[in-house]
Each structure stands twice: as C-alpha cells, then as structure tokens.
Amino acid sequence: MTQIFSDVDGRHAILALGGAYTSIGVIWPFIQVAGDTAFTESLTISILVGGAGIVLLYGGHRLPQTEIHPEFFRSIAIWCFRGIGVMIGILIFIELIDSLNDPAANFLILPALAALAGFGAGIHDARAKTREYTLEQRNQELQQTQTELEETVDRLEESEQRYRTVTENFPNGAVALLDDELRHILIAGKGFEKIGISASNFRGERVQDIYSDEVLEVIESNYRATLNGEPTTFELEFQGRIFEFRTHPLSDDDGEVDSIIAISQDITERKQYQEDLEQLVADLEESNERLEQFAYAASHDLQEPLRMVSSYLQLIESRYGDELNEEAEEFLEFAVDGSERMRRMIDGLLQYSRIETRGDEFEPVDLDTVLDDVRKNLQMKIEETDTEITAESLPRVKGDEGQLQQVFQNLLSNAIQFSGEEQPQVHVSAEQNGADWIVSVTDNGIGIDPEDHDRIFKVFEGLHGGEDYVGTGIGLAVCERIIERHDGEIWVDSEPGEGATFSFTLPAV
Image 1 (cartoon, rainbow, N blue to C red):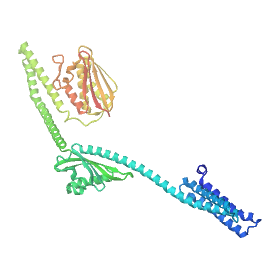
Image 2: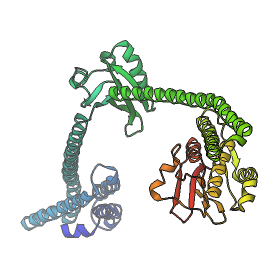
Image 3: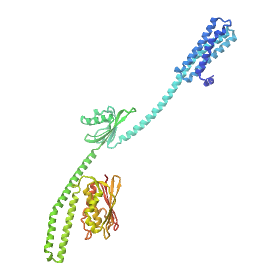
Image 4: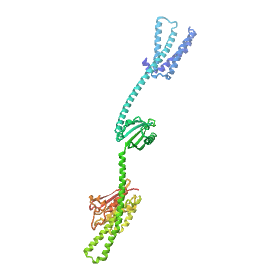
C-alpha cells in the first residue's frame, strides 16, 4: 500500500475516497426505494455514509492549509484505507460467525466510519511525523549553524591573533579600536615604552576618562569627526612626547559607522630632526645670501681700483712707450692683458652672484626669439669666424628670458671660440621628454676629455689656457646655476677632437 501511495498523491486519494462515499450517500436512498428497506433506515445510512464522504472531501481540501508537511499527506490516506481494510476484515469475520440483520447496510456504514476514524488517526500520525520531520530539519540547520559558528570563531581567533601580533609589535606607536562611545576595545603597540604607562591602562576605558581636558579637546573632536565618517590626521603632545594620529571610520553591515581605528606614532625625534633640518636650511640660505652679498660687494668694489690700474698702465704705455725697450714693452703688455683678464673675471663673478638675487619672474619664453637675439649679439663674431649656425624649431618654455639668453650666448660663444682650425658649425635642437624639453647645442670643435666633463662647470675651471683660448672659466658655471634655478640640469657629451654637445632641460609651458 505504501508503494501505491508513493506513486499517487495521498491528498488526491483522500479526495477520491471522500467523493466515492459522498456519491454513495446521495444515490443510496434511490437504490433502496424499490427494496423492502424502510425510508428512514435508508436515509440514516445515506447521511452516515455521505457525511463521512463530505468530511473526507473537506479535510482533504483543507490539508494544504494545515501545518502538516505535504510529504505526509499519503500517510493520512494510508490510515484511511487501513481503517477500511480492518473494518472489512472484522465484518467478514462477524459474517462468518453470525448473519447480520442487513449485511449490505453494515458493510457500507462501518467501513465509512472506519475510514473516518482512519482519517483522524492519520491526521494525528501525520502531525506527529511532521513535528518529527521539522525537528530533524531544525537539528540539521542547528548543526550547520553550529559548524559555521565554529568556523567563524576559528577565523575570528586567527584574525584576532594576527591583529594582536601586528598591533603588539607596531613600532614606535600604537593601534587602537574604539566603539561609538569612544571606549578602547583593543589597543596595543610599542609606543608606550617612552611615556611610562601601559596599554592595559587604556583598555575598556573611554577617552573622556583618560586624557586631561587640554588633550581631550583635541583628540575627542577628531574622534567624533571620524565617527561621522571623516578620516582625520592630527598631532598631539602627550607625556612630553609628540604623537601623530591617523583615524579611519569602520562600518557595520548596514553601512553605519559603529567604531573607529586610530593609529598613533611617536614622531618626537622626527619632529626634532625636521626642526633641526629646517634651521640648517635657514642657516644655509642666510649664509648663501651673505656669500652672494660678499661676492657682489667684493666684485663691485674691485672694479674701481682695477679700472685705475688698467688706466695708469695704458697711460704709461701712451706717454712713455717710445722710451721703453722691447722687454719693458712686453712686460707692460702682460700687465695690461692681466688687468683686462682680471676685469672679465670680476664681471663674471658679479654676474654669477646675481643669478638668484637679480633674476626675473618665470614666464612663457619663446626660445626661437631668444636664439635670434643671441645671434644679433654675436653677429660680428659670427661674421669674423664665418660661423654656420643652424637650428630646428625651438619650443616655448617657462623661465627667465634674460638668463636663458645668457645660457645660449655662453654656449654659442664657447662653440665658436673652441672650434679649432675648422670652420665653426653649430646646431641647436630640442626634443620633449615628458613635462620637460631637452635643448642641445652641438658643435664641431676640439672636444672635451670625458674626465673633465664635470670639472668644466666649476667656477674658474677653464680647461684651455694660452693665447689661443682666452676665457675666465666662469661661463659654464653661470649656465649651470641658471639651469638649476629653472629646476633643470645641464651636461655635456664629448670626446677630444669630435666636437661637443651641451644639453640642458627646461620646463615646458
């Protein structure tokens, strides 16, 4: 029977059984009209059988609205048919023993009532099984939940262990977790060693109960701002030490901020170092300014006595030149040349000392215009040496136009001066490198030994002396300082006898 009801829906079987008994209850009086059975007896049989059928129909129809699990509907149907079967068996047994007054009526009434009894027993059994099934399901869910909780606890313990390992070894500072009441839930770190207190003094305590009013005013306002979702960074002096705090809000599953994490680090030594460094920079700037003022004053004050020496030498040469022998004239010429060289060196030193103090504000500069102006300034020198200057289209940069003109003039003058016996050929080009331009001046001159590439940018470090190459040794130093003022750098690529390429960087507009 169980196999049958596993293939047929138990509720449908109950409805079918109820329909059968209801139908029999309706047609039974009409069947008995032709017989000898009294109408009252037939009506009674009809009511009992039909009533049982109606109850089965109604009960089967209402089963889905009960707490009984659908899986156990077939148990109710089985109980119904079990009751019918048991009652039929009893009637057969009674029939064998003694004949009933009306076997047909008894056969109809008793199984119907038995089915009704079976339905009630089935309902009770199904409810019991439903409760058992529900308990089993809940036990499985509880076991699953318990397993998940155990795994979560393990992960939390592992996470907490990692947190404690990190926080307890946090160097020179502390990491704290605070709730929405600003109570320290967790706090650890190695920043407590220099303030004479322990992390245990903070755990479980609110900031209002720990800090003085002066400290609390700073720390509570920043913590409250973090609880409102705004990360903060601030400095705080505590127990004679300076700490830098960084706070960040933490949210729950609903996105509401319910706690904050605060990371503090002892920056006392760093602040002291920073202050010392700032003071050193200020002292260096002051010293540099004094040196510039001294260089300017020295070079400016030397101009007049040097001019007087040069004037008297020239006066001696003009008045007594005829009375001097050849050796005396040579000595006098050396003295005049020396004073002139000294004048140029002082002018160069004066120019070098004014690069920072007398420079103009940076603005967009057209390097094509700068190069044209330099060509005009050097026009006589270019024509005398038959110099060939070529140039690509140059960019606009941000800088001091007057100082950039000095750079180009010094580099072009050097290219012409140190051209050797060849016709001077100079090429100016530029290429962009990110936010900068690299400008290059290439010549076909005598070249520079790689060992001297750095030395040529130092003051008074001219490499080529003698009558052929007269110079002060300060022009490239001026170029370097100007380029440094423009946050750039200058360098040279050269080999002896193969010319030189001077390159420098300038910020693009």
